[in-house]
Length: 292
Length: 266
Image (tube, rainbow over all chains, first blue to last red):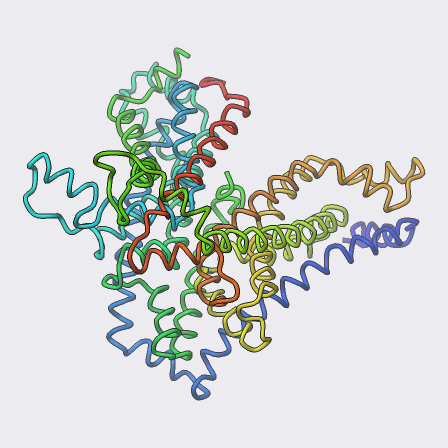
């Protein structure tokens, strides 16, 4: 303790660099102030709004908890998010495992497909899914042409369409962190277990899988966080029929002009996402895993 | 190699991986044939191919003006994000004080907060400050949205740089600014470039905030596409998407081959 204080003291006392350091303090604090003023203040204002509009108090939260329409939207949102997360994790795990175990050439081709789809905007991808899935879209017309079905399948403007589009968007967010975490697992452990007599499945389940569980949690939380507040894909593929919370908030503002309720829903969504983020930060370096 | 095969994945794992790759590529690849249809509605070309939708991108002044708006906003937002991000990461790196770590969490917030939440927030703030439907408003918001990526990229680059680089340069006679300009900034360049690319794409693709705070004066490309999707779907979107997808695939391939491949077995 004394040593620490002495050290700090020393650093500030014997400071021919003070002038230089002042420059670095300015460099650090001005951007932070800018972010606080331009970003944090408006967001905090939404939180405040939820307690003050139209009247002071908890009325918006009371309404949120008792309004059957809100309840329906919340249940739809949670159902879609959990299905999306489960499917993305299941597929993502297998793909990540294939990535760590395949040859360089195959891994490269797989990574190109994953990263390319990751970079194309959600809007363009949602557009493509509409073209594929709509009643007279490519898939239905194709299936009817070969006589597999006689009436178009309903694949958009419902939960199926939303989930197909969302899983597509979320898969890279599942695969890339899982791949990163699996690369950190010592690959020699599996052959070691096999030479000791373990079957391939036994070696995977008792040696490899337990080591990959933290990565699985991290990827799952990441996908869940992005799914909960997702707007673009669910709105386009849900077609106004299947509504998730983000679209519901936007309808409250642009159509029914219920600012208080919209603010309460936004604050609740934000709180849920922040709690999940705090948990996530125990598993992975958030920034690194989503940037690839 | 032998141990990789022993650890290896069975046929089922391989098949799932390749099917997933097909699923990921499917929407990227179908828009190319759609973009070549001669019809005015979404369809696969049955007879002859047509470049009419590519031509409309160049001749239709609405697409052109939206491309202009998007470029203008993205370039300014990127510049702002890069200047702010360089400043912040430099300060955090040089001082390496605990508060810098906490402030870094603040700087990363726009990446985690759901877009709909900050869109609502900016709509309110914009109405209060008169920045609704102005370039200034959208540029400021996009800069804040791109900033986390700049901060992350540069922080990663600086992590390997010794903090006493500045002292070393100064002991050789450099002034603080000279040390910054000639010793430190060049080391940050890779992080700055990749952060700038991320910030640019963040702005270029951004739709949710644009839907809330712009209406007529500022009309970015995603906004135009969104409008094209909500009424009669215009195949020109497929033409535009095909161009984007081609660029993306080329960049993804180039990136993958520039990176040194990791051996299957360490």
